[in-house]
Length: 266
Image (cartoon, rainbow, N blue to C red; front, side, top):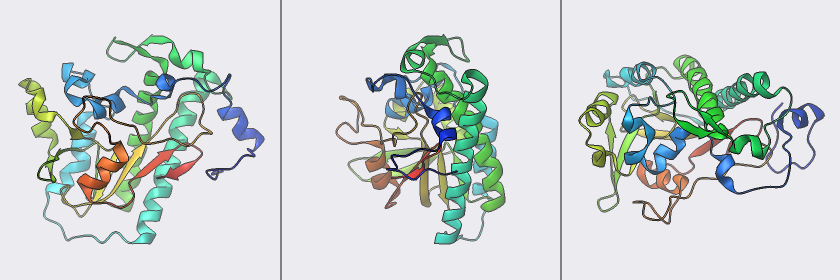
């Protein structure tokens, strides 16, 4: 069942899945993954020290590899975009269910549980919110790869990297191989201000973006619609947020957030 954003009444089953304890607290327990932090400060994120992004590089490369093949430009009509959006909503629901149910049963983690310090996949200390977010992102992106290979083969990329120049308003796509070389030589400054959406639909050329999607996985309260993250003070994009930068860089009217149970939002 898909909940409508703004609904006050919630079906009993959904309440069981998403109930959270206590009043709303500061946003640290809402961070959906360590990778999300990389998007606001890529030069200092954990991946720079050798940690993989949420989706293994082999899968990210596979999803983009078809883009390097000369292919006919694909029109993204409203019907196909709706199919893609619904498929990604299903992936978000699947990720939430597969990660939360085995760990917490039919309840959501509490804010305190979300704030707890735990060991991440690379042995680093992170919050439980970030750990759960990483796991949900991994499931969602693998699901997205499977579904989009059916709906839009060679016309999508998962976690692609783009550089956006504020002065020239120019956007440059970096291939996974280019990003790997930059990281290997430690030239992290070259990735400053990079944008890494979860899912990009394109014509077959990742530089020709047609639609942008980000998964959002709040830890405790999934009944509250997610918001685009503000960039912190000192960041290249300080004073703006993810959604605004996606609109500028990719020339899309409405980049889409995908959240479990609530579905697509803007």
